[in-house]
Figure 1 (cartoon, helix red, strand yellow):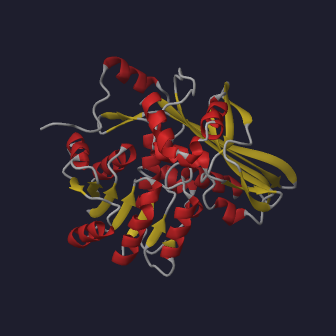
Figure 2 (figure 1 turned 90 degrees about the vertical axis):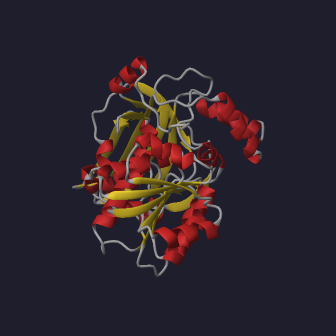
Figure 3 (figure 1 turned 30 degrees about the vertical axis):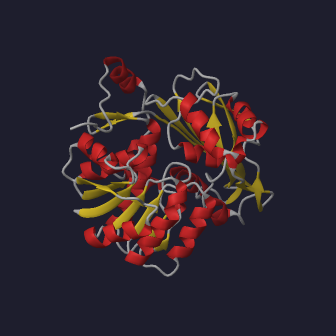
Length: 387
């Protein structure tokens, strides 16, 4: 039984702790800064392999004290991106493996520096995008003799959009605002450049459904650095339903709320509902030369909500938690294969899909089960309040 410290008992941390505990191979120390938050999640899981703690992850001394008292093997941060550097510092000082979900470029660079010379693994960007999308793209890249272009596209969308934004808050509001508001990295004409968020608008059709995609920050991860000298064009864009980008440009640029993100967060959380009935769309397109011919290969998948431990979890919860759990499982099950800073493209797609947690990405899912559970009122509770 391996002890893992999971910091953050929100939407993703709740499922990470459940997946690891349900496996029977991990004991989770689940911590959250809000008093009682971790306990509510642990109570909902009802699994003896989860222990709850009140820990303020912004308090470095408090995190270090917990680590010294409870000696986890690794720490998983499912916190907002701005909390991760402190946690990574504790991991380095206390000799722990470190995993996070950040999409923030500056945070990733800080983690990279902390990892220098360490025998432990420091693996940021372990979620969906960056994360699984980089692993899937890297697999297709290996099939080509020379590369021309690599396109990465991901969207976490409501199955039944009915508001002006055609969107639901399926994950961290801070994360959404961060990727919509920060500069984006791309490869253009063989050179790494910064491009504006909410630009580069394009249309995509997948399985008969029309979407739009546009530049957002962080989703490219370290893939551009890995292949920048071999590819002419590489970029990451977020998938949404048509019309969403225009509305977000109004909010962030027209009303200048990119410079008042606290207000924007309050507006979104007050006006845009959450939902368990979402779908994650994953799309990778790689072009280049194979056997002397110019060809294209695609990885396309749709992941729907799934039942874990008797309760329904949204598609973005499932894909994000499965991504980081599968990477952690591979690292801790193959001691000595990885050390220091580990980029997502160092993991093979086949290994992720064959992993007990990565199987959540299997093709062929539908929305039938989630629709039936919603209709019957049998989704269960992801956290339990009261005595």
